[in-house]
Length: 198
Image 1 (cartoon, one colour):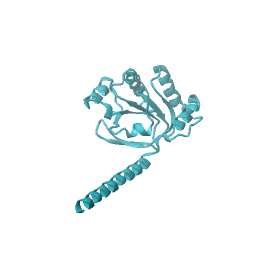
Image 2 (spheres, one colour):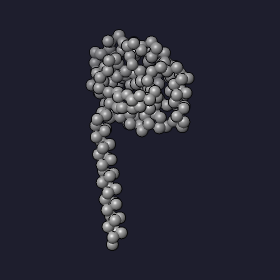
Image 3 (cartoon, rainbow, N blue to C red):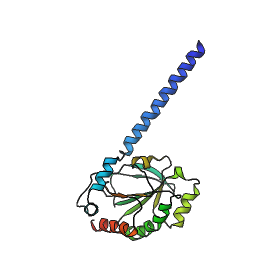
Image 4 (tube, helix red, strand yellow):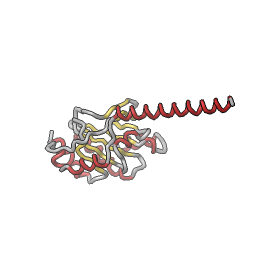
């Protein structure tokens, strides 16, 4: 009889502990920002991109806020407001399309670094070896901050379904554009419009 009471007590304690973890996870989600959803992304894409990048129209969709550790060991929080617009690209070292777009991203960073901030978000939980991340960054000469999405939290918030995925975010935190691998000239054209619209 005593062993049954102990087992039931342990079961209740484990259940309560699990519920506590779930509630804490929900609270951190709210603090970090709301997840983008399909209708939000559709509204971003339904606005004329030229008008949005020139800041004549807006989707009204706010970029989710998240905090991640970077390759350099510092912790960064992205969300809310910025001094400059942001190019945020999700990538992985094993992603062939990411390797194709990496040189373009580096060239654009060099050209626009005074006007636009660049951040990479590596899906570090999907990398086979940690050194592949730094090798990829070094090989491509990336000088911008790269964050490590070790638990896929940012990927979840941004409804990530393909790599590379790029978001252009305005200074007020509004998502102006989102796309996957695109032609380098089109990518540059988007950033030209963005920098001219300031």
